[in-house]
Image (spheres, rainbow, N blue to C red):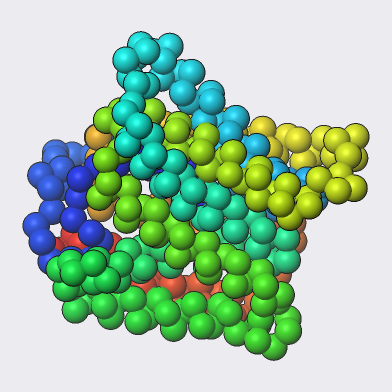
Length: 321
């Protein structure tokens, strides 16, 4: 999964409330398209990199290390560029950031990594694509505004696509545990994203993300130790290929793409930025097929197309709202 996004007050995806004035910004610049391409390709490629990391590194220990290192680097960069005051937070803000980090990274990203031990990277990315659909339903559980009928239709369509993607697990062609882990990851990621906009977070968006990554990374390491991932593990057995993939995830997946995404939130229409949710899975499927020779089966192609169409419907509903 991607690094945690900086928070911006907005209406939940798929509701009928008016959108912010960002939607009325003038012509999209070439810089915006460049930043968007970075998010499309780099975040879409993280699923492939995770699969390569897992060739010789344990699940939660690698995921936790990635988040912790990226969080410390980002915190240092914020302090260096913006001064020490930018990373000062209250105890309540720190606790909120830690909670969101646990949901997004320990639960969300960690479970995706765990799932990719037994399912193709492209399938994992397609399953993760349903996160915007959960974001339509979550406000209902807390007495929020009823979603637009078209958004609800998108959710139902997405659930149908999710069923098609999960079908091979029922037949034994794909490990059911891997599918369950990734679906659980989408729920915790959606819960963390939903909570982040409703609790007292650090005022600096980059510092908030850094604290989320540090907390999520530390918790991921503890989960890995509790699972016994350290037993029989030796650093000398880790391949250069896995080390490079882990470094790629830290630098390009978490820092470069995250910075581009944060800038896009301030410089481009939200509905345009949201398109990463249905471009990333396509990039991930193609890379998995090209680099790791992952099979493009009927359920993956059909179910993936249904899920991407459902997310397109939900995002376009937000634009019309």
